[in-house]
Image (cartoon, rainbow, N blue to C red; front, side, top):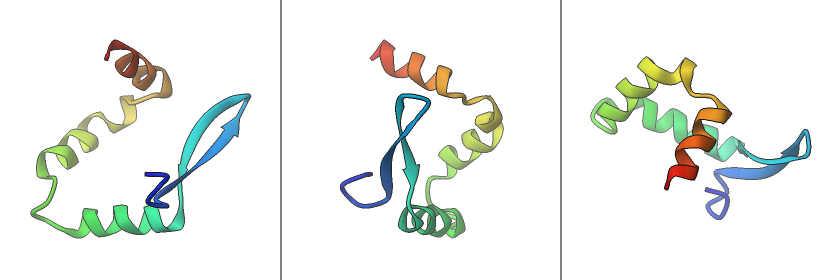
Length: 64
């Protein structure tokens, strides 16, 4: 993501994070507009999106 300039590193509250760049936002918008791409992923994000927190992502990543 960062190497493709879709996101950039940032520090928030002494923690490292990533933030979408304008190019990353545009890529996400383009993918969202394609009705036949990433169908299952889009459904999952719409369903679970509000429940996905930084803590949950950290737990998933740490499980390997």
